[in-house]
Amino acid sequence: MDQARDRIGFIGLGRMGCGMASNIRRKQFPLTVHDIAPGPVAALEALGAASAGSAAAVAKASDVVLTMLPGPKEVQALVLGGEGILANLAPGSVVMDMSTVDPETTDALAAACAAKGIGFVDAPVGRLAWHADRGESLFMVGASEADFARVKPLLEAMGTTVHHCGGPGAGTRSKLVNNYLAIILCQLNAEALSLATAFGLDLEKTLEVLHGTTATNGQLKVNWPNKVLAGDIVPGFSIDLAHKDLSLIVQAANAAKVTLPVAAIAREAFSSARGRGWGQKDFSAMLDAQCQLAGIEPPRLKKA
Image 1 (cartoon, rainbow, N blue to C red):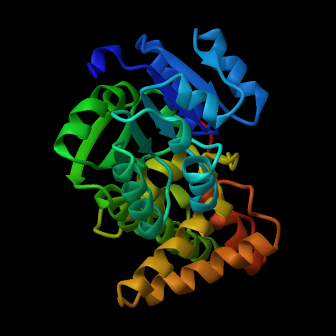
Image 2: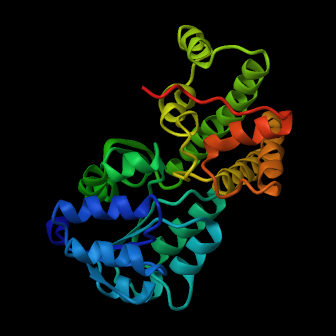
């Protein structure tokens, strides 16, 4: 089918998905959306998207269906379920899953799609929710050359950086490697800055030092000044989701017979934070959770 005439479906309008779908619609792609929450559906309708009451209805109205869901359980149910996407999508269509899931789930989806003559793309997302809002996401894509060419205009509508990492499954595996570093850096930064605070060091001067050495990192330099260090712990990516991803990473590493002791320890730190009520806060709030354990006030940047 001519990709210029593809009808697009989008399922999962959460904190990331709503911004991504909005950018697809702003680029004038014909779009049908579905989510269990009415608010983001209404926001997309205001941009000219059609709404559907189920995943099956989206599939029937679409040639390319995008999913952006919390995890493997939700993806499997919506794609593989008897009333889900594959049961209602025509051969020659494409499923593009942008969720963060385990390799086993991605491989099962790719095989199920291939058995029905349907293309499959795994394209998990890098960067943060505010990047998604602005159409500045990064995508790690696993797909055949033909399927990649077909979905590339959609990816470019949602982001500024698109990496074709290999065949189906390569995107998911790349995302787990990326998130491993991004998440454990939050724990490392939380420990380092709580120590600096306990030492009585000035936060601005400490950051100036760290950013001038190889100790700096993207979380500390790019994300944290806009989130926890500015006093904003509203979740762009929650501690609960970070814990879920660390669990997927440890599970996938075990399957590959690769030991990741730092990942296992970091997961326990995130478990501790969740147990103390921090699960629905931004993952940068691991700083505040760490300071709570130490009995000190979390540091904040001075307001300009």
